[in-house]
Picture 1 (cartoon, one colour):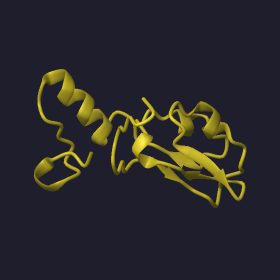
Picture 2: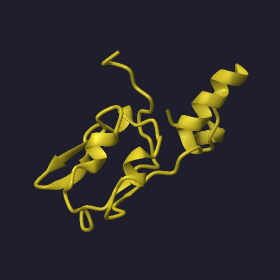
Picture 3: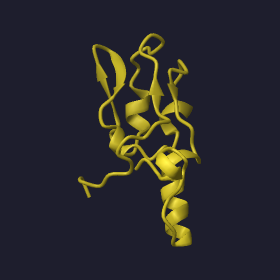
Length: 99
């Protein structure tokens, strides 16, 4: 399972190094190790592991992390699987999914 990828280039995860206080709460709650601390600031370690669940942003006391949950490629992939169709999220050319 360590090779499992959610998105190749997920777009909704954003971290502001300027406002990050380096508490590590995001690392504790992330179920897939997407974020790491570098020079006492949070940064994206591996964007492809992010499933856009939003746990990091909901638990960041400095509001340094934003994630748009329920939209974008992660939601498109899940909805496509449930419907038995190709994922479409309008991120790529012709409405194709960026994942």
